[in-house]
Image (tube, rainbow, N blue to C red; front, side, top):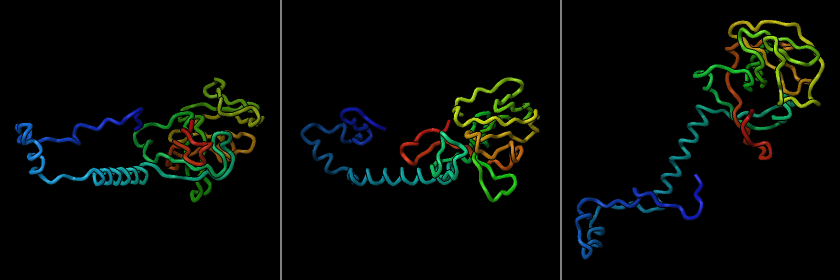
Length: 207
């Protein structure tokens, strides 16, 4: 947390027990000297830093997973060799939504992992006409796909089956996605892309 100007010291860092509270100004110094053993400020800082580091490591280890992007099928948001955190637990508590950028085991070789954007969810009717995606009969607005990354491929209309998802890469002209390998089963999806942390020029949330 950042503070502007001077940092206020929390009141709990300056604790006076009931006996000291009743001491007069003449013996206040003696009351402090005879009090219990006090922990030095540097030790308190070091303890707090260590606790913060341990908590951060636990959160990253069990909640988030760092991964590296290999390839350019998710340009312009995700570049080759970008490093990002994926949330491994979010889909245990909420549904997968259209527009989510997910990480999953490649359906044709589960040893590989792919990262794509969810376009249609179970029950949706999806089709592509010369590059324009339609979901449930309505053209899909896709501001994350710049004009130079679009293509003119088409795909016949199909309904997404239960527990499956239709995914596409943002760089449509080069991406291998559901147009090629079909729907992605729910049990193959293991994370949601959350935050790019390296390189710094690309740092930020994945939208």
